[in-house]
Image 1: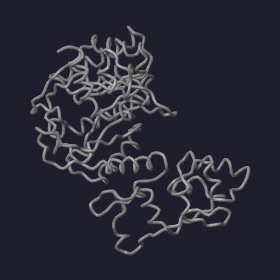
Image 2 (image 1 turned 60 degrees about the vertical axis):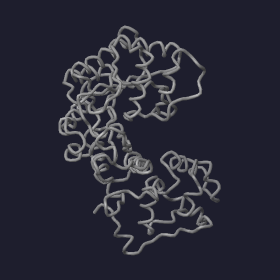
Image 3 (image 1 turned 135 degrees about the vertical axis):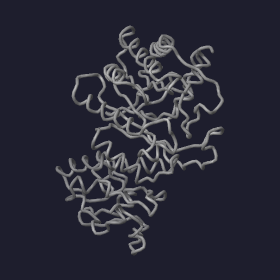
Image 4 (image 1 turned 180 degrees about the horizontal axis):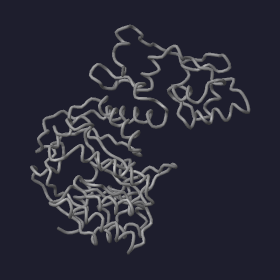
Length: 391
């Protein structure tokens, strides 16, 4: 298979691995001999803000596993391809020289032999770092079955690594991927976390991914495991991928998971990571799922009417960031500005980046209440209250 076909096939396959901070592929570029790659250049979000163009691609789409949710599972007939380290590194560096990308997210299926596939992933990174002196961003996938030596090398070569759990616990993973061992995957995450903390290396963080809905798990299960991963293993991010059925796979008749469910999980995850929320601040319905109609912060507010409205000239950071429309950055800016002068009108809060239409129902400004034309309409009946928080 020629290189152009490999690019198209293996870059297309990589889009289902979400374990990096990437948005939609870039489009609309001028035609070029490498054009098949352009749609798989992703804008990766940087911790300090801004984005960086990253190539997402697989080492191979050959696989010995038969994960029921995966469109490249071994039971499904399709074109197979693999890169050799020299070939992929040369291709990537040609893109770097054209200033198309500044980083690479190198994932892979298991290949016909996991050890051999991990050897190729490591070899590709070594060629980039040592021969081409590439100092940009490298994210490497740690495959199930990778040994300790692979992990050690990956941490010295990559800026970030990831091990995909796919499901929130061993029982759920067994339902969709019997060839994978949940405890073994979790052990690798623990090992990586310990190595990042204790040894000098290039890698500073790790991530993981869940396939949402494939194993019929609840949002509560997903967020319980997510919280434990952040607490016990110091993960940088957990990514959620809404399950979509593929023809020819064992789960082809399962209904697709609505993207709003994935979105709500990310919102709850953000509250846990950035807003100081605890898991028992997140409300679930009687099936253990998040509301699809309202974001989890608004649901929390509606269960705590005794706390609102808050006076913006007196509220502290922890109180302010509980209000819909106010995030950590806008709350800190509000605190900085009110040291110099009190806020007197609701419109003045726009200078802080606050979304006034969302926040105004919950605020007093110099004692004045200026709610939206439609007042808060909360249902605090016993039936609504029993719809479920974590006890």
